Amino acid sequence: MRKIIISDYDPQWPDLFEAESKLLQETLGAIILHVHHIGSTAVPGLAAKPVIDILLEVASLSELDKHNAAMEHIGYAVRGENGICDRRYFTKGGERRSHHVHAFIMGDLQILKHLAFRDYLIANSQVANRYAGIKRAIALANRNNCHQYSMLKAEFIENHLKESAMLVKARKAVLDSGD
Image (tube, rainbow, N blue to C red; front, side, top):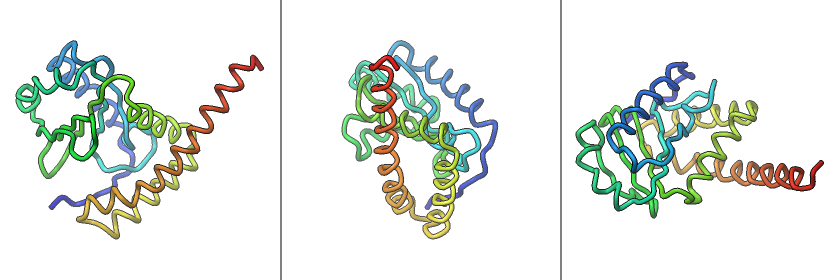
């Protein structure tokens, strides 16, 4: 069973993302339309599980599915949708996970949610610090239960996704009004 460990921010995380992004682009080629660093390791200064989360925007999930063997060749386990409709999920590192890849068709709402939450935390250090504290407390209470850890974080994430969506709408309204 995997242990949940929250680490202080590691300045190497962006470099690890860049290296893996390059490997994924070499492996999957034109299937990938965009690659994003998401999750807590993408937020400077934020404590996180030391797992690099990568979001791929693709034109076709069925085309991506044809490259499962290539993903396995570079060390990924193929997980299919893994509980989220219209997603493809891959993990690297076995029980000592190092990378997660989440793939969605370009334009999927999940892409916007992941990017909005990441950007919201980057722009709001106080919220990011609260999130780090919550993650540490949840991890201590649920050291070996990844599902419980994820479930307990979900309420915080959903509340702040709503807040970040309101900020995006307010900014758009200001831009649209020409002020």
